[in-house]
Image (cartoon, rainbow over all chains, first blue to last red; front, side, top):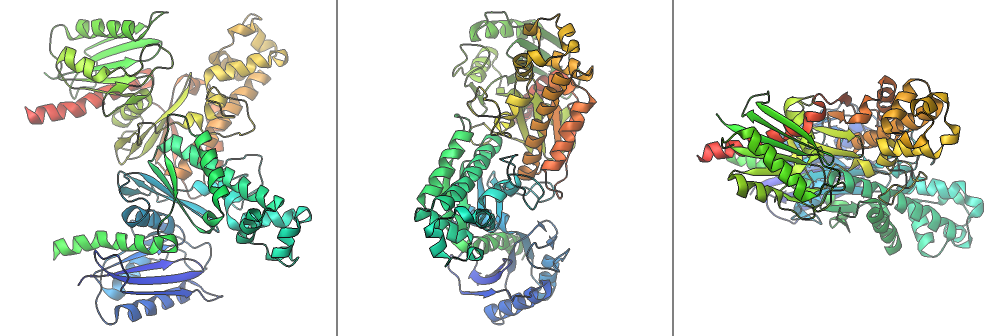
Amino acid sequence: MTLIVALDFGGTKLAAGVVNAGAREWLHYERRLSPPNADAKTDLEIMRSLIHSLVQGAKPAAIGVSFGGPVDATTGVVRLSHHVPGWENIPLGKLLEEEFGVPAKVDNDANVAALGEHRFGAGKGYESLFYITISTGVGGGWILNGKPWRGTEGMAGEIGHMVVDPQGSVCLCGKQGCVERLASGPYMAQEVQENWQRGGKILRELVGGNWELVTGKIVSEAAIMGDELAQEVLYRGAWGLGVGIGNVANLVNPQRFVLGGSVTKAGEKWWEVVRKTAQKTALPEVSFDIVPAALGDDAPLWGAVALAETNCEVVEKAG
Amino acid sequence: MTLIVALDFGGTKLAAGVVNAGAREWLHYERRLSPPNADAKTDLEIMRSLIHSLVQGAKPAAIGVSFGGPVDATTGVVRLSHHVPGWENIPLGKLLEEEFGVPAKVDNDANVAALGEHRFGAGKGYESLFYITISTGVGGGWILNGKPWRGTEGMAGEIGHMVVDPQGSVCLCGKQGCVERLASGPYMAQEVQENWQRGGKILRELVGGNWELVTGKIVSEAAIMGDELAQEVLYRGAWGLGVGIGNVANLVNPQRFVLGGSVTKAGEKWWEVVRKTAQKTALPEVSFDIVPAALGDDAPLWGAVALAETNCEVVEKAG
């Protein structure tokens, strides 16, 4: 039995799973919320105890890790986390290798999720695809020629900060009208909050009149129920994402776009606007399709399995 | 002696060169203007006679072809030319293979120029780069992992039709504010012509008062000489290109951008605007440089040599 350990450091939540190499069902699986004042140390501590409880004394063959933030995939060093302090330049891969005595591979969540969807999900059989997560942020990961493409410094895939509306609102990144500024959940919520006086009855009732309770999810719900302000904000986000996807199609011409993350649950109309805008932005000769991720929240974890299995093959050949 | 034939179907001009495999100097080289009423048949006829005159009875080992328009690089079939009629679905590779009895590889000019710069020019030693030509149109070609990346249907590289200003003027492609609509020579000329009443003395003198004579080159010259309208149009083009490059850097994270084509001769200020805008558009963690093409107008022809040499190795191994 060759045990594979998969880890997902997700910012607000931590997940770990154990699987037999080649199998497609978890032997054991656990998910924990990160504590409110978490830092790198506490998250690592929780993850360590999860691993020990999952492998139950057995020695795994390899560990694969998805990390919610920029990572140097070659060395396994985390550059930082935008959500949890203390992750600056932590050699996560090495720490795990030393503790468990097995190879450990680390990559950022979008790259790992792309790999997961490619190997086990909506990207199976596709030699080139772009995976996009639209959630608290907007990020992407590449599969080109059947393999992850990470870019020179592992920074490829940043569709979230593509400028699609240079006259638009300012994003945290300093630019105006990025895809993320338009399409991510928190920014959609902010947009609704800033225009609260124009909000209709539906929105008000959903949050009991308290605009501070508006979230990306509430915006989606209100839009589906017919609220005009919510529709305007949600479909403007879908438009921005569609322009981004069309531009990517023209630039790199992948076969398929796989979309995951909470915002993709915003209903059929959202998908329609994304697809129509992307098609209109792409040149007529450029064809592609845009489909929902198949693995849902588990895409990074299954991608981590795929990452680890690459190592496993090496281990098995060597041993 | 292993002769390599390189061909460049450039729309308005035709060029052919012959080189010894491995050598970096032309044995023979000829360039012809395409006749005013050229079609695919006349261009092919001219190219045939060029080849025969260049190889002087010797049999080449392989032919490489750069074509100014969309090509299926796998089959060597030209899809069409935007400049010369009659190229729809012409199996150019096969025609050459049958006539000369040697392998012939065909790809579009931007991809081939990217390969040329990668192998022999400003991209030597770079594993990932994006070549952009800014001339009558704006197009691009990829080198990723040291090899051309053409996309699923060979359509990758179309930075020219990335939308950077959704409120901008309408492009021939139907979209508003594409990079090509802002940065290409003919569109810059059109922009100046449409605002002719605002043109200053410098512009008027350069074209003897006749706005119909304004070209992209005139716009560059007038801008360098201090004409305000010309500067506005030229640097707005550089801005659009810079946004496009910054977006590409975020998306694919190549090491280097290599820029060729007539508009890149528009002076230092143009380069400065392109570089500054690209840097501002890219995320701070994303680094890259932007350099001029080294092979100039011969980039496609040298790229065609590189294309053909790939075949040559196969031939030599097989024989």
